[in-house]
Image 1 (cartoon, rainbow, N blue to C red):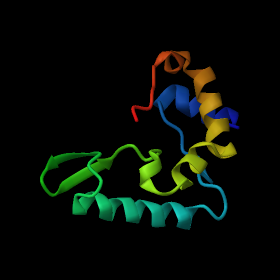
Image 2: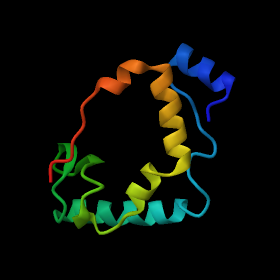
Image 3: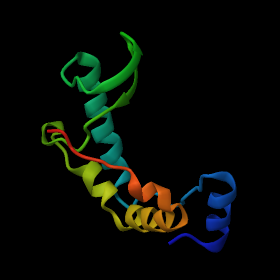
Length: 105
């Protein structure tokens, strides 16, 4: 739940820092999964990425796809910490509610 100070900061600055942002015990699992998918992407085994050049990967996509081989990214996105903050932000910025999203696999 965002505090009144965090709500004011979001309205004034357009962002808010959440601490803690990751549930206890999940950080190492997220780091390990991120490392594995980064290695796969750099080796060419995972084609879903954004880059500015051949060796410059700056974003990896489809992290919820079953072929990623881990559920930790989805577990994080569905964690109470994330859900509560997203719910609060949607109330503060109703225009975010209208953006369509779909999974393409």
